[in-house]
Length: 320
View 1 (cartoon, rainbow, N blue to C red):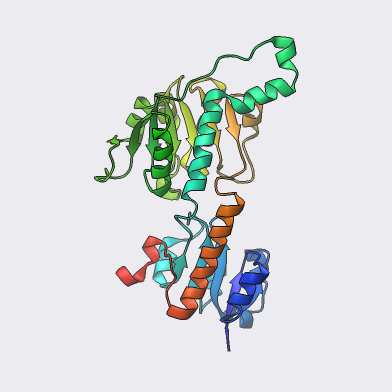
View 2: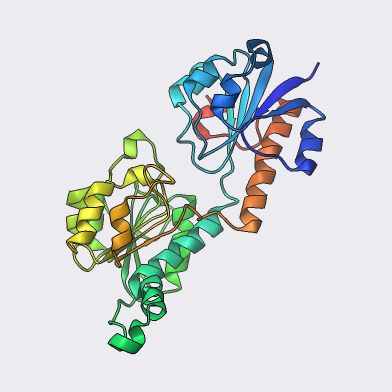
């Protein structure tokens, strides 16, 4: 008898056929719908297919006594409780690397947008203000400025590569300095904000990084500084950011992520010094296809070898 794969995501016909060689595939719309399934069915579930933006409540995991593997479509793993997953030795696969370029592309697009006010000036033209009010105000040059990267990991490195094309000075802050990069290490988030013109947030989310960007950091960034967040919404204190933008304590911001998606603080909609986009950093046909392929490969690899192909680091029990 095949193990049951419980999927909280839709699956293409092509991938469904591949998975069906090893699993009885059961697709639901939400964790709540899964919890409504008969316990006899839940007892047979050995694999779960989900995503980095889909909630994975412990209430659901608790009723899956035979769960062995989760494949998560995405690079973040915020929905997954590390202590719980490790205590049950559940394998957890994810999809890093394949989205690095795509996310870095959008990160730099947002940086350019808020500095040169592309979105705001577009609205200016559409509202007829070029005719009524004359030329648009002057904006900020990007070339030659200082970029501070909070989180110089895979994506942060790709952002740095793009910044080099704009002759930017690159600074960064990680928990520890890297010996393999030529960029200048700054030993605190606060000091990084003081020393850069653009503060790029590319660090993982999670409770340990909640509100790293707070009022003090925003004040340090200053009236000529810009904040760009392509990481996770929780890393930024949204209330402090709204106040900083309203009072022009910083020059501007560009945000791809928010604390309570898809809800965005309505106060941001009234401001022209912020660009907001709906968590689209990896949202290209090419990248989402590659992510989907790798997430399915993780499930197939587990069925064949007992391990996922690409594991979340803290759930790789082969090296512990």
